[in-house]
Image (cartoon, rainbow, N blue to C red; front, side):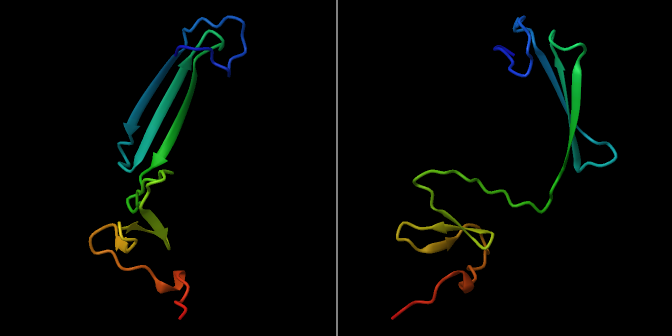
Length: 109
């Protein structure tokens, strides 16, 4: 790691910090991912290790959220839809049901 590490308050910043990371699946539970991170630095009295555990969500819907001015995706009732070039609401995946009309104001004549 090159650069002063702000979490270590020492006068000796020698750019010799070593960070080791080990990712592995639990042998007993394939839906559990472990991330073991070890920091070795002269500012510490001994190596510092932390293990983070993550659970796989098999029902997750992964959407990409970009704040761009040309974003044509619309989220309605937790579902992702696409706004076409002529401003028509379209499904974003095959077989997707139309949005529930209660999310829209009734048309005024």
